[in-house]
Amino acid sequence: MKEKKTIDRKAFLSLAGFVIVFVVFAILTRGRSLARTNLITVFNQAFFIMLAGIGATFVYAHGGIDLSIGALQGMCVFVAVRLMIDVNLFVGAITAMVLGAASGAFLGAVSTYAQIPVFIAGLSLQYIWKGLLKVATSKETINIPAGYTWLDSWGIKVLILAVVFSVVYYLFTYTRFGRYIKAIGGSSEVARLSGINVERYIVLSYVVDTITIS
Image (cartoon, rainbow, N blue to C red; front, side):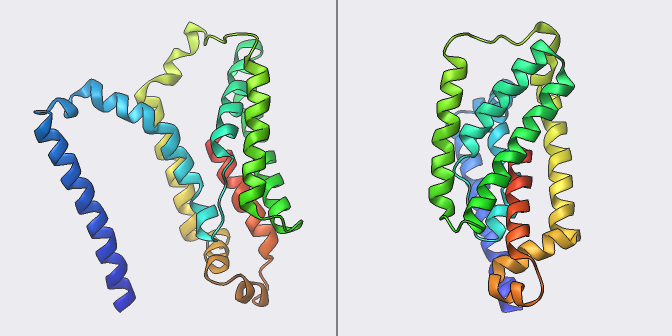
């Protein structure tokens, strides 16, 4: 009970701090920070970060980290847009998610089965994706066709965030996958002795993470 109260107090203080900062900025800017255009700009800039944070829930829950998500996200966007122009939207989206899943599976497998520290593996993968992205985008500028600009609207982004958050929340809270991930985060050895395939679920956590950000 005491631990629960401590956690609730921390959550309250975090929320209170956010509200205070929000109000102070609103006062200092005389309400300009609350203008519709400004709020939409902030939301658009934070959209990919919020997506990455939602997906990373499973990774952080068991004590992992993925340093490659920024570069991977850029590569997935390039692949999706390129295929969206050359083929269609569906193929672009699916290919980007497959690429993300493959990257997450590779990172998870390398860090668990090959016993390479996830920090080093993630950093190395980050430079690989950055290098590939630089080569891929150095020869041309890709412009999104006018018919697809509706995808950049804040309404679509809110819908995507709501769907992704709902799915991740359900998986993390109500499924065996989420319970196992939390158990591994508590103690991987105890989880292993309980019959949980620790390596498998760690790999799956990275796959979910990278599919989300892709």
